[in-house]
Length: 88
Image 1 (spheres, rainbow, N blue to C red):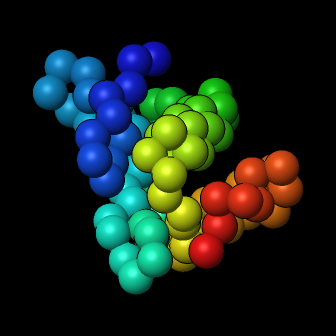
Image 2: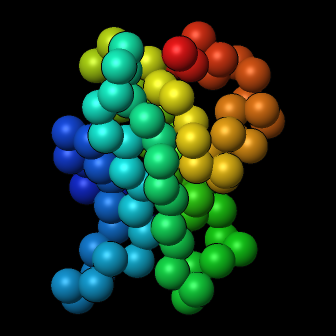
């Protein structure tokens, strides 16, 4: 799956339809990972984890920190303590 990385969003669009996305708008001190979405057709294939990995890589690349208010993002950071340096 090919992802497009934007300033505060990463998405996978196929035939004009958003099949997966993660939003992380700016907030005080960094970004707020506030939303993840994976279309039902892709559930169970690890796409949400791929989105989070891309998000973590983008945060690291741009020197930003995150506050994960999305329940999936919060759980992902709990499962990946090696990425805790990215947290606000």
